[in-house]
Each structure stands twice: as C-alpha cells, then as structure tokens.
Length: 102
Image (cartoon, rainbow, N blue to C red; front, side, top):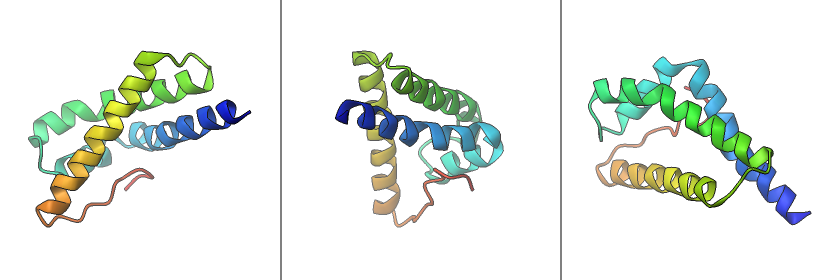
C-alpha cells in the first residue's frame, strides 16, 4: 500500500511539470535560461528532452517499471534542480521553479 502511494507521489512530481513543460517548451526554455547556468541556445536544446524525460520517469513510476536506473535518474534530476536553485539563490536571483508552467 505505502509503495503504491509512493509510486503515485513520485509520478506526480515528474508528470505534472513534464506536461506543462512539453505543452509550452518556449516558456520552459526561458525558465531554464533564467538560472543563468547555461547559454540560451543550450536551454533551447534542453527544454523538450527534459520534459520528455520527466514524462517518461512518471510513466515508469506509474507502470511499476521502476528499477535502479529510474530511481537514479529521478534523484539526479532532483539534485540538479536543487543545485541550480541553490546557485541562483546564492547569486541573489529568485526564480519561479516553473513546475506548474509560467
């Protein structure tokens, strides 16, 4: 029971933002660029693949296809996001996470 709840919880963490991001990759590109960690051209290249990865991770959690690579990739994405947020805050930039669109 708890395992099922955890799967749905982690799926939602990636599915909801992934759907917003894939629906509006232009806004997602701007959100990535606001962190000022990558060039805008690279942010443009990153937006759609990141959104697809979020949706695929959510699907893996929901379809109970989670194995170590799913957990490692999801932990990696969350770690990179946390690090980027920390760097932005450390540099005095307050940025909306963009998890629910722009």
